[in-house]
Length: 152
Image (cartoon, rainbow, N blue to C red; front, side, top):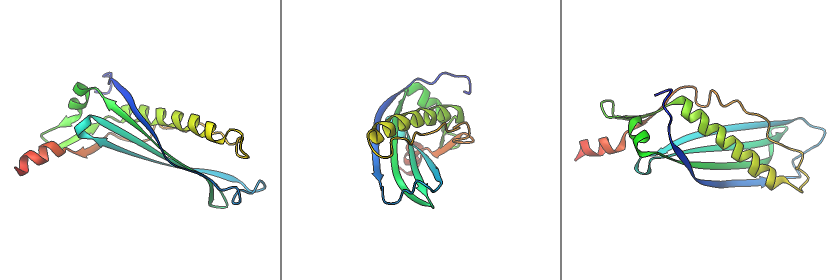
C-alpha cells in the first residue's frame, strides 16, 4: 500500500477557533509556537479529518489561538483497501496521513496569514513544520460496520 496512489479531495475547511489577545503579547518576550494535530475518520463517508491547533505564546500565555480542520474525502476503493475485517479495524497508511497533515499546515498558513493581515500581528508567519512524523506510524481505528454486524 505504501506505493499505491490514493485518490482524495478536500471536502471542507473549517475554522473552529480564532482569537488574538493583544494585551498578552509583549514584544520584548520570546514567542513560542505550539501545535497539536488530531486525525479522525468518518467510516460512513470515506472521510478523514485533520485538526490542527496552533498557539503563539508569550511567557506561556497564548496571544494567537487558531484551530482549523480540513476534511478529506477518499476514493471508495482506496478507503475499502484500508479496512482489515479479520482484525476488525481500519488501517490508514502513515505516508498518506503525512501528506494530509502537510496539506493542513499549508491551509493553516494561508488562512492565518489572511486573518492576521493588516493587524499588529501581521509579522507572525507560520514557519515550516516537519510533518514526516505526524503521525509516526500507520493509524488504526475500530471498524464500526463490522462491529455492528457482529452485534446483530
